[in-house]
Image 1: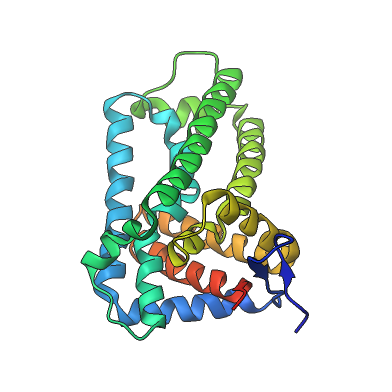
Image 2: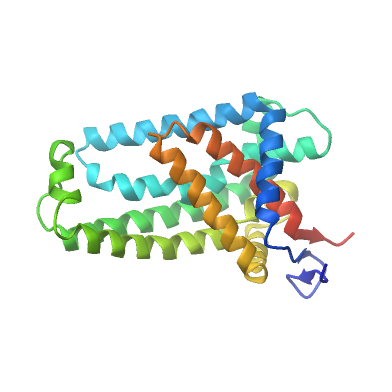
Length: 261
């Protein structure tokens, strides 16, 4: 294996180079963590599913159903911060400890301010994405936003739906790549190393993605695939998909980030 690359000139985290097959190893280890603590993992998965239903219901009541696609994408943008408890379960199991739901829920206490600040950063990305998505919709559909009853005929069956989806997907992909770069390992790092600040964690994450571009591209594609599968099953698949990704993300962090003794 190649020598680890330091993130900063002084003492601190170093990035371990990984091979293209490691994302599959992370998934296997994530699945093992889920099997070892199924109650915690499935409880988190149920929360994701319920949030999906609440989003759909809220958009329907507010007659803002045209925002269903950008808000659904919010699962990917906010997923890293919502999975803090899952990282804690994997951390404890790695140390041979028994992880409980209470410990998972209160995991943020290990580094409250910095993890919360990271959550604010991700929330800002989500708000920017929603504003951009609203603007894109207004450009292609200048009429009054359609309600649920005519959403399919007014939007999905309209002549401009293909360019609308292409532009929206391209812009969303740019934001998603940025979020992935700063959050791929940053939140597990903040949890694992309470003395770490959010700037150091984000810089480490960006460097990990940059130095391991190909395997991290595979990992990003797998995250999108599993999340899309969960969403395609009317959010039911998220019960398993989200905790699996969360646990696997912890192992991605442990695989790539090393520290001085």
